[in-house]
Length: 404
Ligand SMILES: [Zn+2]
Image 1: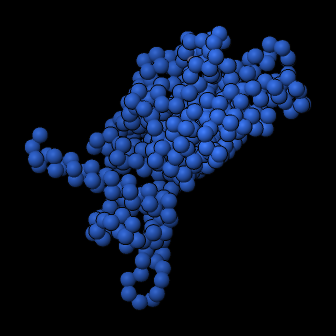
Image 2 (image 1 turned 90 degrees about the horizontal axis):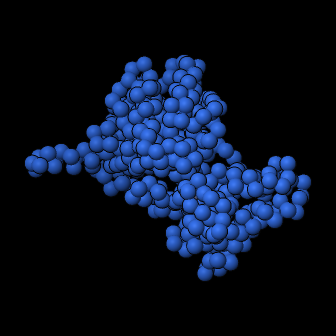
């Protein structure tokens, strides 16, 4: 490679990083002026002015009326233009496909949901295309679409939109990002559902002021997103956080991964509810609400078992807090208190990370949209040559395809 080519790439990368830096500063602190941005970033006034003008032209930032005295040049506060673009989130679970249309602050504008009769890639893509088409058909004067985020319970090859496997959906080697992108004519970014959930909490949820935290999901499986030093950790193979597959106890129930005695085969919400249904016709949450002692013992054991493992993960990663989500949050204090006690008992420090319970399903669906929005804010990770100017405009005007 010639020196001039290297220099060009350095300049492009440098510009992309500066854009991300400034966009994220304004996102976090609305109302910063150009000179404040220069002070905070260490970039020259000219460099800040250049990047800001670019972001204004692309519709990502907007200017508020100037503030301060009447004389001289008054600082112009900059704001994120959240409604300048929209994003689409598609969340795939075992039974359904949920779609949301959001602005860049991930405020939900509209939503659709489709039940899945089967979970083949064709079924999932068909349901997603139908829902997204219906979602967009109901909109008028839609701003440019920044992209589609797709989240599913699967191992996703980082950066490629390729599903290596999904035990739950029964998939192996499915180019799901490309399949959906070709049908919709829009860029699609694919992410594991628990990582998308963690990303949503990092961007605008319980973890938005934390640099290092866990988002632990106990639902159909058990997974844990680790945000460390401000970044989601995916690992080399996109397998980071698949904690449900640690060997808990053998002999034990068979796991979806084919092994015996995995933690989630014992203690995911789906496993607990299956085991409960063998002896009682009432749904587990209903039995718990009625104060059933057996039901309480079942979820207490599960909470304690997960808490014991959680203590070890906390010792490894040292998170500030643990955000607990998924269907098991409906089990109430019998579950969460046992988990907290086991975490304290298993950790060598007297002060252990706080466990915050998130009972809403909002961050799961919003997480899929957050995956698309993340592409806007994280230019450093964007594919080489991609820029917001290349963002898709509408499904009837397809552009170049971007998969991650
Ligand atoms: Zn397993």
